[in-house]
Image (cartoon, rainbow, N blue to C red):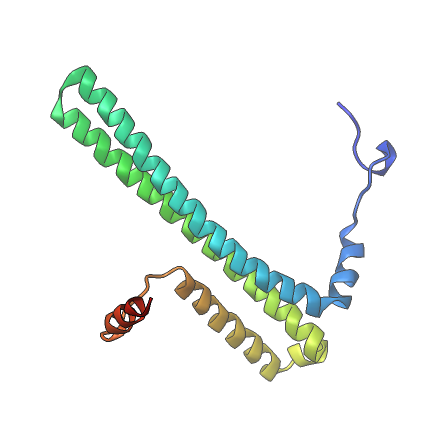
Length: 167
């Protein structure tokens, strides 16, 4: 086993060196964390969709293999049902974990953004804490809506058909 750290010639970062850097560049780090939150949410959606598709395909494959081997409808149906439920649950868990991570990034990002923009004294006031909480909640709701279902309004189909007929 090799040694790690400065004694082995490696580079070590002490957390006490990182905190002043982050606080000095709080505005930039806050914006980067907010952008990272959006990217984490999008990656979580893409990963959950990929897991769902892979789970359905694998379940269908094994269901077909089991049908050829046993011709037992109950076993194949049970296999298909449990595989589809497991794939759906795994996709849901990935989306929820991505949302939780994104909300954490939003909270840290808004804190650092307000810290860098208004100063540390602002966040020690009731107004500052309220602003931070409100910004975090509104941004988190926006991230939650980003992954939610799209609702169509009553007249949107007409506008879509009119736009399509223009081409």
